[in-house]
Length: 227
Image 1 (cartoon, helix red, strand yellow):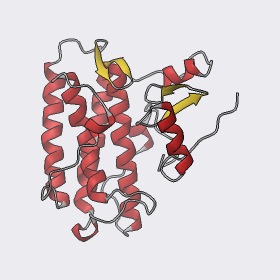
Image 2: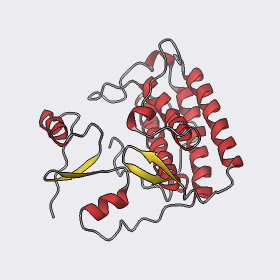
Image 3: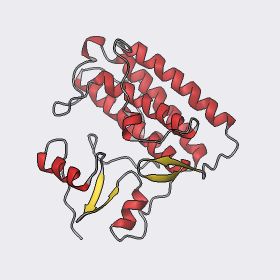
């Protein structure tokens, strides 16, 4: 079965197709008028007629260590971005600043906690809530915000009695095990940390403590940096 990738960011027809499906969030895999959200790759595999993805998720006790490492790396990297560059675009063809992406790297974890602890429904909009006007205007301020998120994440994990994370929470792509959202949030933060490394390199700044292949091993990261 052949599938065609449509860049809805730069292809107006792609955006129209999403609206025809009644969808507001991406990624989406569609056949005719049927679709499935791409957030759960096992759902996608079943949708296209495959018997699973072949991917074995890391256990939660491994994910927490990797996520903490990624978030700490994000703190280091954002502190290195010169403040005069924070409002520049991350990439030319997307209207997102380095400041907003750096905040988002930590906001992903905060949205995860609001879902699994506070009972919110996880959605793209929840993870994309931007900082308030006039807040987090420097790399140091964003890193300190990250410190608050890391502390809350550690507190959640330490207090968690059922660390298999099999219980389910509500997301915009259906009821999902916490483990699934945990993995997705971990690699999502990791992808933005990788992108921050690319930003620093473009600015001629050597990243402080690069994430290694071992740091990211086992996470289902996109192959390409800007996917």
